[in-house]
Image: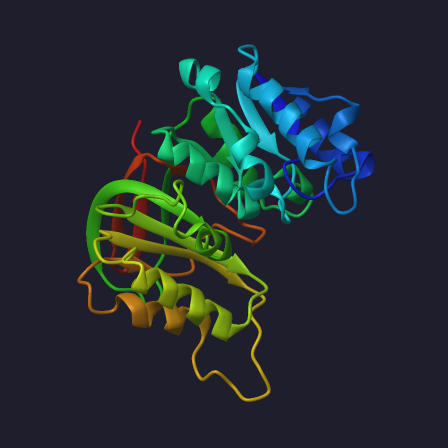
Length: 288
């Protein structure tokens, strides 16, 4: 199986990728990349046209089985409208990543395609073995199913629906666009990093006011990592802010799911129906 490496946003170096490239080989896959992966244009991995051109090449290449985004940062939204998915749709391939890659996930969900929310090569040196196994074993044909401990603020219940979502900040930036995920009747996944608590509240309130939480069937919240507060406290944790927005919806809600900006970043299949059960244990099963 051939895995191409792309950098749709922030730039990467050969040194930063050396461990991941060797790891991909050791897992029995063939990494596909060239010197263009390491292009540099200010903070980006090449200018917008260069990044889009390289990604388009891999999207259209029928010999590629999966595309790993090497890191996030910021920049995918600058090139998403430069990409053409016509040939990709004739023979879809897995696109893997998280954080800023939420833009690509959202685009694929708008096209009716599944994609993998999972760790990226820049993080491989820090990831747990469970996180790495979850994505590579899935690519080799294993199913994805999780059972984790519940948390006191979870809301018990069950739901079976397509999983959509990603990074809160990126989703917020896509509000009003043609690729914001359809959340009606779906299980929504959210995670974020390095935000002020009032930012989380502002973004979640925007989702509420836009009706994006009105008809969700369940909520899975991953890492809410490295949150900040002002000198005058906001008065709620990030988890409490999110819970406030969905407490009255009679849906299952799971916090602290192992996905997002954390070392134990387990793979999730966005765009696929999942079974969520929240009780004394939390189970999430994607079936075959």
